[in-house]
Length: 166
Image (cartoon, rainbow, N blue to C red; front, side, top):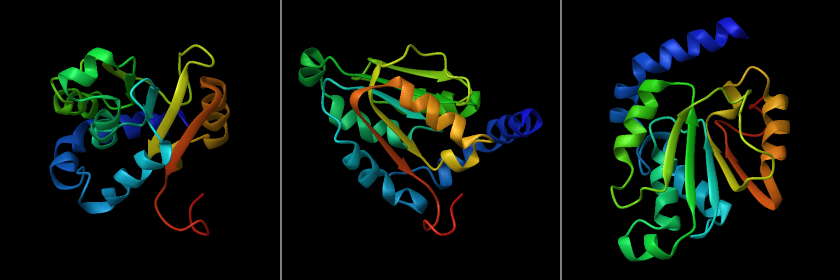
């Protein structure tokens, strides 16, 4: 698992710019599900949202629309958006792509199997096309459960059908 993570990090740091240019749009490639994923999370302006394996920011930018991406909504919103990913290169792209009006956001380089957040802090957690790449999926799901507040919501999108996705 350690070597797998090292390889994953090196690979994503290398391919992130090309990936972002060719695939990471809300409306193209496999990301046509972005809108549905965020819609299923039922995000509101006061949610504290974690985007796990945020990559170059496709989901982050869709979430911003619900938390507040204009100055009037921003002033009244208590919402916070945090994106985590193992790739520094992808996070750099994500940071630069978030609406300049939405400053209540952080992008943090972090391993999904070793999240350093307090328990019961997030009202919503989203993860698009990341879960199936974690070496220990069960460990990540247990960690996510600890991070959600009571009645918090987890929305996940994975590649493939339920019969063919690990």
